[in-house]
Length: 431
Image 1 (cartoon, rainbow, N blue to C red):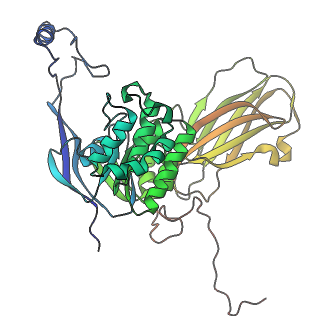
Image 2 (cartoon, rainbow, N blue to C red):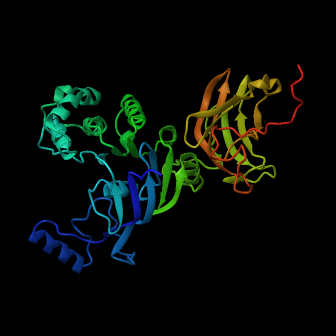
């Protein structure tokens, strides 16, 4: 078996909490005097906790704890986890921006990294000078970098600003140039942290396409992103981090489902399994939406074989005609998975008197495990009159049944789990 190009063994990273020097003796004395009088630290960093009612149990925090995994050449591996799980810290350790407290990380080959905005760039140097600086750091000769210069500039779209110091670039320009440099200077290993968080849709699409090209060339990528759909399309495997510890390493679909089933999304918004709305002056209005089982119980997690219903209530303050309901279902943060209207049922259309109405729809029994979000629309003559986007969510869990070697196992290809009937027939098959 080939040796891995990345090998992480018992890696841990510890940081010390508390104050640090302000830069001058005068400021340090001001900080000491404020603390002595029980006042707030005058030099505290914005976002840093300063709640004096909560005592810290330790002066140290483990950002990473006992991380172990290997990556083979040509693999695209996604680092998954909530904000603060340790993903960016792990990339910093692998790219040698910071060292581990315990353990070791072995990397074989040239490493190109795109971490935070501006990392690896000297702000006083121009875009051109920074391109050659990064090439030198990677061990490339000037002629090698010069051959790639036009491709880098075209990809980043910074031709007009190539002779301008990077400190005058916007964050979007800096990210575009940083990714272009990291991807085009042909490192054997590419470390990318949240490249899709900055930049417009066109640039994000270019980045995904370029990473796909890089992986096809046999180079290795470690990729951090909260865009789960892109991660699913790009990655072969996933490493799931929770509170600095490794919760899972393996198939990307399984890693994403474990992340979502644990409530791992950082941006769940107001989605829940039941929601009601205050009445307004609208002639027709949604009043309540809920996900329930066959006993009418609202739950956040359902198990394989359990009936799942979406109940929708609305009120009409006058006689109405051609009012309908649409639901749209997404799975694991990806694009639309299923959409259907009440207009397929003739009795649900037609004229209705003023009053309250309720409709119920059963979720199909062929759903695979994962996190499902539901959008609900109140329709009038086929046009959305009221929209509740991603208003409901529920998790479908198949841990109550043995999925080993079963066609509906989470790691099998496809997003559906239909129960197909198979049977042996005579050979040759009768016509």
